[in-house]
Structure formats: C-alpha cells, structure tokens
Length: 386
Image (cartoon, rainbow, N blue to C red):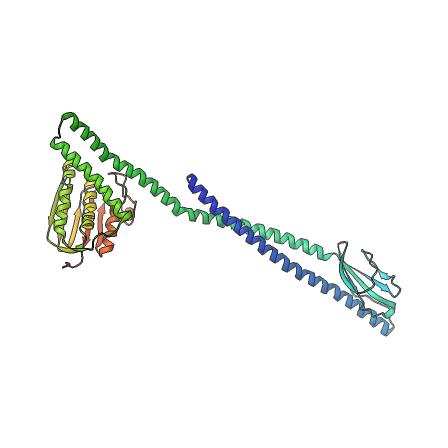
C-alpha cells in the first residue's frame, strides 16, 4: 500500500475500533450495573431469609419452652443475637454493631442486616447477620466483565482488521489501475509524439517531406487522435447529436481508409468486404466502434499478416492472426483498464468503449480467440433501421 492507502486504512481501522471500544464500554457498564443490582438484591434477600429463620427458631423455642436451636448458618455468614439490654446475647460479630433499629448497610467490608424478627421472645430483641460474600461476588463479576470485554475487543479488532482490508481492496485495485493507466498512457503517447518529433526534425533538415515521412506523420497523428477520442468518450461522453440511420458499410470503409497508413507502416494487409446496411447510430460512435476493433486488430497483429473485416446481413466480423486472448482473460476483456497482454501497448479502454456503445444500442458483441492463433470479434446488429 502507498502512503495514501495506509492513511485511509488506519483511519478506517481507528474509527471502527474507537467506536467499537466505546460501545463495548457502554455495554460492559450496563451489564455490570444490572448484574451488580441483581447480586446485591439477592444478597439482601439471603440475609433476610437467614434472619427470619433465626427469628422463627427463637419464637418457636419460647412458645414450646424448649432450648434454642439455631438453623444451619453458611460459613461465610456470622450471626449474633442482641438482648433487650442492647448487649450481645450470643453469637459473634466480625463488625461490632450496637443496633437501635432494624437496618441494612455496609460496614467495614461487611453487609450487615439488623432484624427484629425474634419479636423480643426469649429476651432477644435483634438478630444481626453479617457477611462479606457480596464483595467477593462483585470482585468476581468485575473479573468476568473485564475478561469478556477483553475477548470481545480482540474479536472486534480481528473483525475490524478484516473489514478494513476488504474495504481497502477495491480502493487498492483502483489505485493500481490508475497507476497502471497513467504509466500505460504515458508510454502510449510517447510513441507517436517521438515519431512526430523525429519526423518533423528530419523534414526541417531536408527542407521537405518524403512520402514515407508523410505516412509516419499521418500514422502518429492518427494514434494521438485515437487516444483522445477513446478517453473523451469513456470519461466525458455526452451525446451531441441524436442517432440517425447511417450506412454502416460507408462508415466502415471510412475507418478502413483511416487506418491504411498505419497498416502500410506495419506491413499488414487490411481486407474489407462490406454490404450496405442501415442502422441508427451517431456517426462519431460508429467511428469509435469500428475504429477500436480494427485498431486493436492491427495493433496486436504481426507484420506481414492479414486483418479481415466483413459486414454481411447486419453482422460485422473483425478477424486477425495476432497473439490471441487467453481464456481466463476473455470474460474480463471488456472491463475498463483491462488488457489481455502486455504486448502491443495500449491502456485497456478501447474494448470497454466498444462494450458501452454496443450496450447503448442493443448490439450483441462476442469473441472467439485462441492464444497464438488470432481473434475474431463479431457484432450482430438489429434489423435495418430506416
């Protein structure tokens, strides 16, 4: 990734993690608060239950005149009985409490419950129940919440990293395409510009142009114009005129004549056979459509080969004996900035222009190709437009 991609990646990742972290903190706080309230309520009820059982035991012993037998007391709980005089009657209190009324409070790390459940039977006024179990449970709850939050945060980080990668993938691909496009078009422009510069310098030295110089100038100028037309249509396409029925054969011959100087330079035989066929399309788009197909055929054909163009009964075939297109590339060949090969130059927009025009006018485009044997593009137009 370049610096801009890295900044975008870490900005997205940071924003995702910060927002997720705040959400996790909020969820953890809500969970801890609700669980803490539940634990505190349960502990209160537990201590009340113990006090009520002891109170019941005191009352029953008084009523039946039997010795007081306290119920089972949990090991984490201390119980004390307070007499009518306010002094300790029996039991033990980790935290010294002199009760004057029933209460439930925290004292020195213990939850203390003072209950008047004995109702002054056997001279006992209060039952004091003390336990530190609540704080152990809350500490355990905090530990659980911490490790749960940490695990969720790790999971969120993994998800955020994956999503950031997925988010950046198309952007990275676009960056690669753009960089490649700039490099390709720079290389593509360099060839005709260099040819124009050298030819013009040679003409100035000789004081005139030979037929070969004129052909070179014409071919280089046409290459520059082709690049300009393709880029203009692909990126700034605006229909300046409505489509009207034109003779495709005439448009095809015009494009063939346009490319003949380039064919002569590359020593390629361009053979065109065309029957008259009317179809509603703008002349500029017809020139682009035919020009890109014929131009590509010439570009990827070796010297002393043939490019055949035939228009018959509304079907156009452009066939070459060039390098061909690999099977895995054929499905993507009409995508913008996609090139079937590094040979022959180009910057991957010609066939995307062809596909766009065909889609706009309902023209079916197919191809047949084999590596090293050449390529055949076939365009099927609708019924003749009148």
